[in-house]
Image (cartoon, rainbow, N blue to C red; front, side, top):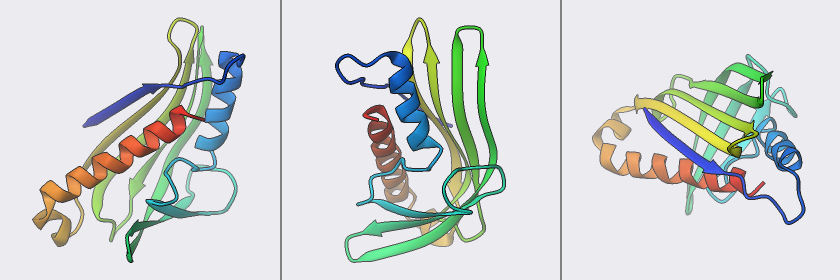
Length: 153
């Protein structure tokens, strides 16, 4: 499993609640990847919910590839001094990778607001199996790009 984590960079004068709410808003609309790398369609549109399908279009210069994932869990909970919102999706047949990914925004009184992404996958197609070193580099690069984008919410 790959684990990624970053602190949300708040704007001057913002409270940690405001930074959390901005990151939460972006996360629950799946507005997490830079558009130059991944475009998406959320079905049904607007807000993530369990059972929703996300069609992802990965753009590599003049070439693009479409694949889909299904949202299998969504939560927004508070326990003690920690508030967390997040979702998990699983790849669908035909996706370049076979696996699950979890995206979370966590506000903790002691640690501030953090973005956490966990990814567990293996090659989903013959091409990604054959090109595993390159596909892993790309997968890690787009996940880090999502982490940076959410951390600047």
